[in-house]
Length: 122
Image (cartoon, rainbow, N blue to C red; front, side, top):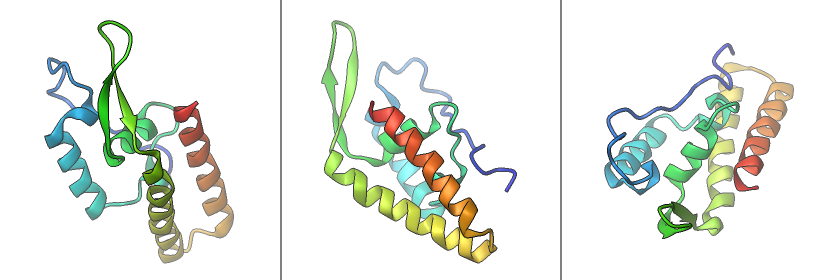
C-alpha cells in the first residue's frame, strides 16, 4: 500500500533527442512490453507529477503534430482511451482482489487516477 500512487516513470538518455518520448519508437516498444508484464499503473502511478500523462501518451497511439513555431505535440487516438482505461482498471481489480485490499481503496484509487487523466486532457 505504501507504493500506491507513488511510482514515477522517468527515462534517462533522451535529453538530446528533439522528439517527445511518446514519438520515440524504442521507448514506446519498451513501455508496451513493461505494461504487458506489469499492468498496474492505474494503482501505482504517481498522480502529482507527469507520470499519468506519460503512461497514457506511451500507450495510446497517435502522431506528432506541429504546434506553435518550434513546438511539437502528440495527437492521440482518443477512441483508444476508454478501452485502455478499462484494461487498466481490470488489472487493478485483479490486484485489489488478489491482495485483499478492499473495495473502498479500489474506488478511491480509481477516482484519483481518473482525476489525473482528466487533468491531462483539460
